[in-house]
Structures are given as structure tokens and as C-alpha cells.
Length: 232
Image (cartoon, rainbow, N blue to C red; front, side, top):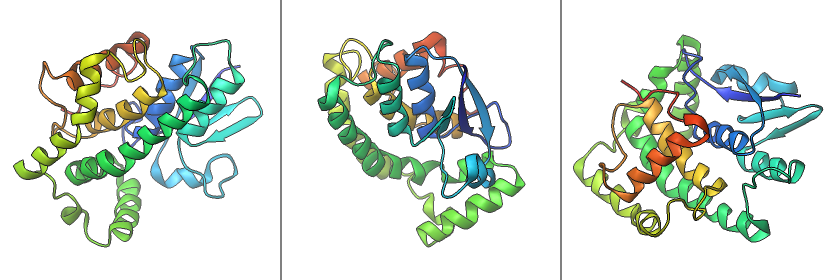
């Protein structure tokens, strides 16, 4: 049975942009599991599979519903252990939790500060109203003030935060070593979010180990990431 992946989109259903949904997309492809992406817009998320605090990504695998990208990855490894593993044992899961925390607390805030208006622009009219109201309540200020990171100083500071990633990827092709693991998809999801949503470029230039790694990730699973073109 084909797994259903509820995947966040804006006005264009062919342009999934959520970093967390991209993690789930890549995880499903890594496992070699056929899936159907069901496009969902922001105002619709709370109604999925009975509502009650739903978020995306969300998958339905037969009678099983799993929410949250990390929980989905754990479920896929537990349910399909005969397919390529996303984690290498319990220690791999624990270390990937650290990577996830680093992304969400260090990298994602900068990406929001340079692309939040672009993310808003991706939405249809209802989605824009939903997004603005909730994000402005969350940040306590207009989106125009949230998007404050497009300065040389902010870009330089952001590049310095990437140095641990850069040093690691000088030594090995993926965070998982010779082959990708879910830790790679956690980091990839953030950069793919920026690539799809915004013309403002946060990815280092060609020749940088991070850029080389990202290009490899775009080509994984028959070019799954590259099939969604960059913002133009």
C-alpha cells in the first residue's frame, strides 16, 4: 500500500517548501517506499486526520498515522528494518537529535530572518492571511521587521555558524559518513526550504564543502530534491 505524505505547499501545489516535510520526503525515498504526496496549505493543516493539533509532515501508512518528521523517520526504521536505515542504532538517533536541535535553534532563525516575506508570498490569499496573523503573533512584530537578516554582517555571522558543518564535510561526503542518514536530511531540509522559497541565496559558493554536499543531496533518490526548481 502506498504511503500518504501530507506535504505543505502554497499557491502552487507543485512547490513543496517546508523543511520538515522535505525531511520526511527524503526519508521515504531513502527507504525506497512508494508514497503519494498530498498537497496541504497552511489553513488546512489543523483539519488533517481528525485535527486536534495536527502539524505536517504527517503520514498515513495503512491504519497508522505518524506526525512529526523525526517520529516519521523512527517509525520507518522500526516498521521497515529490512530497507536502508535512516539511523545507525540508538546512538545514531540520539546524535541526530543534536543535529536537529542545532538546525532549529541556530540555522532556521537566520533562514526566517532572510526569507519570511518570500514564504508569505508563496501562499494563496487565504494562506497569506493565516501566515501573517500567526507569525506576527509569534514574533510580536510585523513580518517586514522579522525579515532583518539581509545584511553583510548577518550573512558573515551566519557563515561562521556553518563552520562545524563545513569542517565535517571536508572529511566525508555526508554527515552519515560515506552514505547519507537522516542527519543529512535534517540539514538538507533547511537549505532546501531556502532554495525553494527565496531568491536570496544562503548557500555558500561553488567549491565550498557545504555547497558540494548540498548538490549531492539534491541528486539523491533520482534527483528528488532537484525536481522542485529553485525560486526564480
